[in-house]
Every structure is written in C-alpha cells, then in structure tokens.
Length: 404
Image: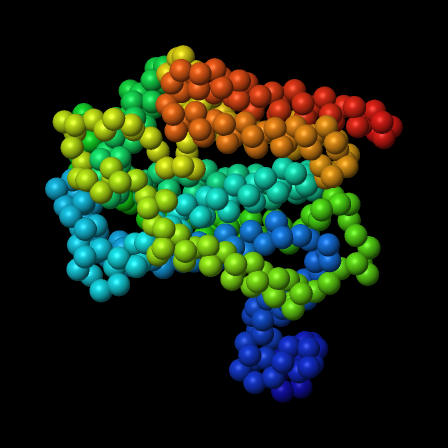
C-alpha cells in the first residue's frame, strides 16, 4: 500500500445520455440541459388541451416584452413631480425609438391584464384550482395581485391628470380604513400631499415588483410541473393519450403567440387611442379636477364595486374582497367533478359571473350614476353569491350524487 486513496466508486456517465462536448461536460456536473429536456421538451402533456391553454405562454412572452421595454423607459425617466411628465414626453419625442417602446409598454400592460383574466377564467371553468393543484392556484392569484399593484404603480408614473387623480382617489380610499387607514395613507403618499416622495416610492415599487414577478412565475411553473397540467375533461388521461411538449405544444403556443402579436401590433400602432386616456396627456394639475376620474379598463369592475356600496370603507372591502375571495375557491368548491363541462348549473353560474364582472366594469365607467347604481349592487351581490352560495351548494349536491 502506498497510502494513496482508492478511486471513488462513481459510475461513468454514458455520453449518449448526457451528450458530448461542452454541453455534455456541463450537464454531467450540473444537469441543467437534462432538466430542461425533461421539463420542457419531453414533458408529457394531455393531447386534448384547447386554445385557452395558450394564454400561459402568451403571458410569459408579454412579461418578457414588458421587462425589456420597461428597463429602457426607466433609463430615461425622472421620478420627480417637476420632471416626470416632461421626461415621458422626451422619451416619446426625442429618444430614438422611444415612442415605439412606450407604445409597446402601454399596450402590453392592457393586453397582459386581458390575457390574465382569460387565464383566470380558464382555471375557474375547468376546475384547475382543485386538489392537487392548490399551490398552483394560490401562486397564480399571488401573481395577479402583484401584477395589479405593478400596473397601478405604472399608471401613476407618467404624472398626467388621470395619474394624479387616480392616485388621489386610491389614497383617500385607503385612508377610509378604520384605525389604520390614515397611517397606511401616509405610508403610501409619504407626506401630506402627493409629491416627490410618493412618485419616487411608486417608481421603485413598479421596478422591483416587475422582477419579483419573474421569481414567482418560476414558482408557479414549478407548481404546475409537479402535479402536471389539468385538461378540459378534468380527469387524468391514460399515458397513451399524452404527447411530449415539443413539438406538439411548442408549435401550438407559437401559433397562439403569432395571432396575439397581430392584435398587439394593431392596438399599439394602428389604434393606440383605444387603450389610452386623452386626459392623461395633460400634466397633473392638483387645482383642476377632471370631469370623470376613472382607472384603466382592467380596474373598472373593482372601481364599480367601490362606487356601488354606499360606505367608502364598505366599497373598499367589496372591491378588495372580490380578489381575496378567489383564494378560498379550492375550499369553497369541494365537488369531485372538476370541469364545468359536466356541471351544468355551475357552467351557467360561471357565465353569469362573467356577465356580472362586465356589468361592474360598465358601472365603473358610468360612475354608478342613476340606474347604474342598482345594476352595480345587483352585479356585486351576484359576484359574491356565486362563490359563497352557488359553488358550495353545487359541490354538496354533486358529492351526494357521487356517494362521496
């Protein structure tokens, strides 16, 4: 014995399993390529997924576009009351390609929220929140909350008339919370009036949340890959009914992305006025209140709830509760049947929920004036009744019918 250590008992890796060359050398030490192939190329997918499943890939693509354009805009933006509006004007008029990137960013915000609502509807319709996908559902709702806060912060940054007065309405609504409201309002605004501290805080919040969203997306995707995706029938398919993610769903997702990109380009460059508020092209003026203060279209349903309830605090509870109640859906709906395809009553109720959501948006658009106030209250009542009454009753009936 010469005192040397015996060779470690490590079985050699087959070159065919992990490749050769530089990629194989890396993969034998950190198997990222193998993991990528397993999770994104060979990953088994149900063969019956319809077009609603495209919106996950669409959301990821739009997120990348929003991050890229947002970083460029942040490089040329000045987060002060005196310069914020003029810096946005400078981006559009003087920075090469600035007008195009801002158009992409503004359009991307609206279409991201539209795709997010469709993605949420698909989860509700096909029961993608049920066991064992509760973490997938909860992480998706967490992402939605983060996106909504990020979108509101981004809406404030141009510091136009609607930006200023929208922030003012949000601050006063937060201040209406009993006991802690004034403190929260002061933390949000940073001083007794909307000024440099407020806009700087929201700029930092907007920028940091955008990258935090990427991390939570990673968690969301991991929560999908552990139990596997749901499918329109709501029941697991036999292994022979699965197909690999590539090339079947890569080509399907690319087709959906191309169609979505056509809509994106048309709205960004041909009809930009559909998604922009003319009043926000005027600099913020605390001395002049616009005739109609309203948020972006994707917040209008919650704004309609806020206005439909007589109490300011009650309206805030209703609009916030409309999002928070979604977190309880996996426990409100205990039915063994997942897909609304096989739940006639829930299918009709869910379509009514969509109608109520649209009606609440129209109520917000018309500021709950006249008959719209009654419509808003009825739509709000139905919205909460669907989750608190209809879903549990349907679940109880279906559990009894299945003998569970």
